[in-house]
Amino acid sequence: MVDIHTLRDKERQRFTRTHPASMAQADAARRHYLFGVPLHWMRDWPSPATLAVEHAQGATLTCADGHRYTDFCLGDTGAMFGHSPPVLARALAEQATQGLTCMLPSTRSVAVGEGLQRVFGLPQWQMALSASDANRFALRWARGVTRRPMLLVFDGCYHGAVDDTLVDMDPASGRTLPRASVLGQVHNHDRFTRVVPFNDLSALEAALAQGDVAALLAEPALTNFGLVPPAEGFWPAARELCRRHGVLFIMDETHTVSTALGGYAREHRLDPDLLVVGKAVAGGLPCAVYGFTADLARRMTQAKEAAPDGHSGIGTTLAGNALTLAALDAALTHLHTEANYRHMLSVAEQLEQGLVERIHRAGQPWTVTRLGARMELQFMDHTPRDAQDVRDHARSDLEAFTHLFMLNRGVLLTPFHSMMLVSPATTAAHVQQLLGVFDELLAALA
Ligand SMILES: Cc1ncc(COP(=O)(O)O)c(C=O)c1O
Image (cartoon, rainbow, N blue to C red; front, side):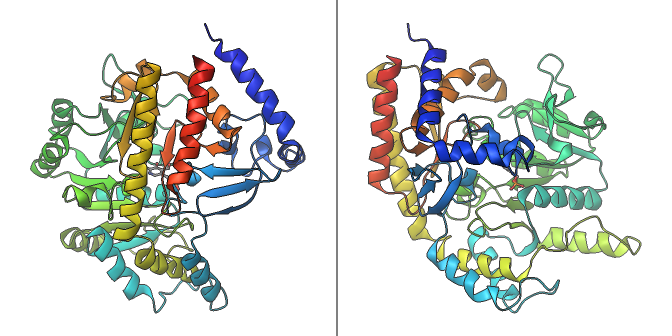
């Protein structure tokens, strides 16, 4: 019987031996940063020290020790179109000498608006600096417009640092619970947030029927709790329920933009009232957008005009800045393209097939769940139905070992779970590299 802890210790020793520069950087950085990193989640990587990145380009990155990695994490989707795409680098360089931020629209604003409509289908847009902010603003508009207090989310959801959504569901009573891991939270969100299991239409209907819900905020598939796809027919029925109960339907496509050009909702004609996209939307620059229908734009205008003068609580100074607009313009024109998605989806399919074949051959009870260019290796024998199903089959020890094993052999998976994302710069050779390392992993676990 393989002892996963012994295996993991060996991998930790191997990392320490082969990454003296990253180890030294981590040590020195502790003098200036909490946990030794600029963002404390960067310590969620499974290695003894977080890799210090020397540079990243296309589908690869190079660490301080000169090791080259094939990157299937891609900044947890921020770099979905590859690191520093040349068209984006050129657009940024050009704009960098022409003004970075003026709190005025740039002469590109119209072209960007047209690009957003062309790619994502909705006519009206506003901007934010992060998907967390865009979700927060979308919720504020939704509550302002409907004059209803409640938000509905799914158990296991993640929509960024949005307090209202950082809640869990009590499996026994179905009640909203504060998420135990959230620090510094003093508000009890069960007053304003209701949580139901994903893929459960009757729970959704019961929650909506109370008549006090402003919006359903959801990812088309849960992508932050493993990967839980929607059941056949779930979304058309859920969409119809929202319509029937006057509830705004907000799709957070920050991760599911990997599904197809324009995202999942467009591909599956889900017809959202509001749509949020962050991270990769401008090729990885701090930028997020939220789009909405003409009818909702009319209601938002009325709500704003009816409100007293003063702060709306919606927006931040740097949103829609000139540099970001230049990046967004270039990204909408050259990155969000049919050709890029055709490549990403075909390479992702090769990766999925290779993993599935190997898993079957090795007789491991594991599953690969794919949504366009992203997929998840799940240490369970079926595609999960909801967050509880994922919890019931959690194998955090095996997951952490897998990540470190692959990292030590030049392949990066997303640290939070076992997500692999394919970019336009990812090639069949990168896939073969991952599959070769996966063969070694299976042998080590045999
Ligand atoms: C679906 C979804 N929405 C929103 C966010 C928040 O993005 P950011 O951290 O860039 O604000 C995330 C982050 O992972 C996400 O997965």
